[in-house]
Length: 284
Length: 269
Image (tube, rainbow over all chains, first blue to last red; front, side):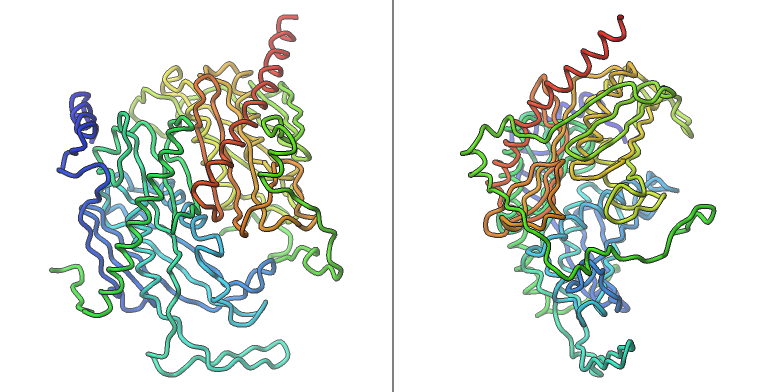
């Protein structure tokens, strides 16, 4: 829904006053609801609702052969599905560009070893490894997809249980893998350093986080920062528009600060979630 | 992915032979950013560039660029109406295609665009969108094709610089000259000679921080129109790297200006 000039000016003035449309200040996120383990057939899953944005992430595991270039590492693959339920714009092939962009950004954010160590996913060097398929389903689109997905992915990876390997039998070229019989005999993935994405928007002279759909229309430039613990693993400008170098640096600092805060909040929530373990599902 | 069976696709899986080399390759030493800035004026530091316009006679505008050993051809065709569009759009569109030739990299590329090429097309498109006056070409689409003939680093940056020049030659209205540069931060100060890239700036990272940064810049107002970074770099160091890149873009702008001037002079003659 396009906005009129007057509406845009209203939003711009609100940001100037540090009091946005919905009463937030510039650094505040909208309320979020997070649930893990919602999908039964997945090895790990999470469902995140950020105001009107709804994202479901499921992790599937398969045994695969590692790439010859990286015989010590497992594989990680992101797939984003923008279903037409989310917004009518996604009908047909409408969501494809966004899906590719989102998947690429996530892949480059998780690419580095310090961020996510794929060496733990190796079973037998050069022969067998775990392949993680991270499937992201966008159920409803209410702005700020990047942040919501990255949080949901981190939660889903936290929830993921990798079955323990009991024995690996090598007979010539034949490799047999014995997986532990007990369902509960699983390993967790270390997601301590997994990055969270923060979308920053420039409205007027200021920079805001977590833009709503209408605020996204007023931005002159926006940028995604993927960061953990003051280290940046990906930055990318979104859409067209350019920034001055000083603004860019300001964005970077702001993004790192917000990412740290978001990360702390998420880790704390994830630590609590496993204690209560109360399933709510989509119907409440 | 469905394969094109009319083409020779090669074996389904192949492995670069370099992985099986028994002896360790020679290593090349790489300096850290501090050392480089101490030794010389890094603002002048960028790989050797050769830039030429009008290389493809069939296209409206075209350019050929060499950065180090990297070689790229970019063509721009006449604006045509945006296909499959019902309503009139006030702004024009740019469509970018970034393609590696099958023989351009150490590993053979397929004819179809893979994910990396798609990503690069998207980055290129976003960078060029802020350089072109899209409001001057309403309801029209400009198609830009870039083909990498040899990749030795900076392929995407080279494609963006050449596309800027080719657009200017094609007479597409633009705001500004666009330049771009790539910087790679290596894991240690000694790398395999196979990984030495002549096309991009390479520096050694501190404490095994590493990554790649690509920026592109519009010069009149010092605007950075695209940044893309991968790897793992502390926020404050990242700023130093971007500053260096931005300076080296400034010196490339002079080359681009010279090339355009030559083109105009030739045109008048």
